[in-house]
Length: 88
Image (cartoon, rainbow, N blue to C red; front, side):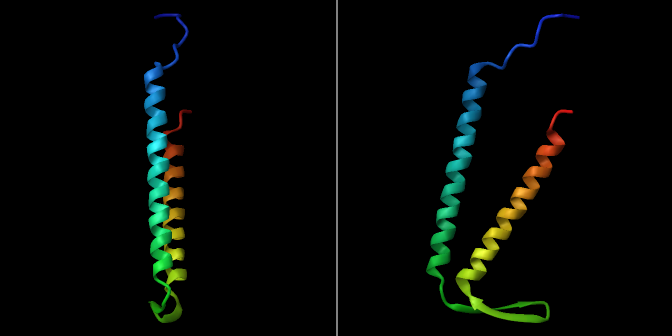
């Protein structure tokens, strides 16, 4: 068994992690811009039937709600996955 102290990770792995974070951020911004553009392009009213209830609302409100629900689900799934992977 060795008593050497643990060494920090090599610099190239930190650079790779920074590039991955930057790529994720750029991807998220692109998706958000496209979603906002799509929402603003669809401003007419629509009817939505959810089981028995039918609601009429502007399409942009429906699309914005769907986009936010998807973001919330993604956030919750990512947080639970990170908790399972966290070292104890």
